[in-house]
Length: 247
Picture 1 (cartoon, rainbow, N blue to C red):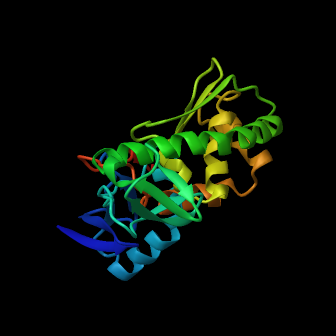
Picture 2 (spheres, rainbow, N blue to C red; picture 1 turned 30 degrees about the vertical axis):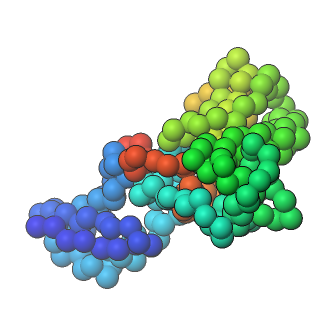
């Protein structure tokens, strides 16, 4: 027997079991779906309260290394279409003539009309170029706090990941991250830089991160929620989170 509940627009599949004890087991499946296994005698209202109490945990786990499962967001290259940068919305303006690249002018993202055919590509290039200039001083600040020495910072398309860090000191940030508020970009930066000292998500990693960012759990949860509404280019398929299970 199965049922469904809704949490913040996410569908949670409920599977009823014959367990004699009043237990509930929450699982995040490989495709990002939520599954709740619970005894038959637990009412839906009680299960919904349980899910709400686990809301921050759910978002935190979904955002830990992968992007929250979501249908891809499309952007039209027409006047007035909005593009986020550092949490602020900038409207697109298509102009008759101009440079061969996207520019930010007086709060508007300007795209030459003769470049519309490759407009998405140019906008992503703009995020990468402008974002790198914004990131560099912030990387230095967080590196000092964490006492690590990154050798190189790049802004790339990382698929399902917000960022990555290699032990040779190279740190990469997804260009789509630059759409977020600075406080959430800082979380991504600090998270990846911490990996230069602690490669794995063990207790030592989270202890290190908490020393420089005491509210990291809140930022991690907000990243999952706000990150699900970002544009990742013209995607052909939805993204998903990695498998996470609660014992």
